[in-house]
Image (tube, rainbow, N blue to C red; front, top):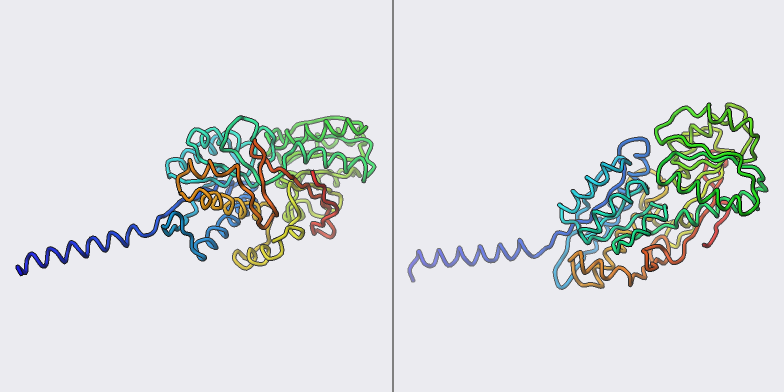
Length: 378
């Protein structure tokens, strides 16, 4: 045999074999977006960590779709809790050819970004956005694994009126889609259950000095002040309320109801009651095990949203498995049939992409530690 021919043949065989190895694994990108810079970076990092833990576990176990080994890559992006940045990041994830997105955190970023994912036909699963409008736009791509403010606001108002026996309430919101939406839902129910809403003021999500609003509210002498906003501003708000001598309870929603709130509010946390848009970590079916592995992996406690982000990744992969495809269109088509049992419990969706069975948990703080006081099935 001609030696040159033999060498060429061998080279072709080796090249073919190598190309076969190179294409044996399919790399699939899962997008994840949350603010990892700015005032609420700790909450955004909580989401990123939850999603990263899920991706690492799936890769360690091994994932095969349609006979092909699939390796997941987490495409993590920072939207800085800014609506304009959120749309830019969403477009980047579309350009990166992600097959699903876990995010965003804020309703004010999830809502504008959702149009971009919808246009691209990519499923978006938010582990945190609670404004009802997010899933009311008619998009087939929008899902969330938390309850909505249409459930959270009423739960918080009902608890304040019936369990805390509050009669007079002042309301303040941070003018964001989340804070304003939650405050409005709270106000509607507060009035319907007989509470006297003394006032409703607006601040912003970058504010640091609330003394002017609080001095006005002090003159109204409410039993409670409901604050619609995130922990970064709720902490100083509650602290300044105490410094000004207000005895009113300070009520907040999930964005404020973090482990870090105690650091931000100091001893004023003893006067705070807040709600969360899911089951308490210690009450979740897989909560204790998740908490242990999260703390071992990242060396810090779960803030709020990590278990929801973790399950959101698994829910997307569950749809991928049922579709037996990594095609975003086929993954999206499988999403309505979701019935996934994970860390947060059983997840099934209604026709809009909302949970069929939302849960609101209520907390107070004892000696700086967030303490569960009630769970309301919605």
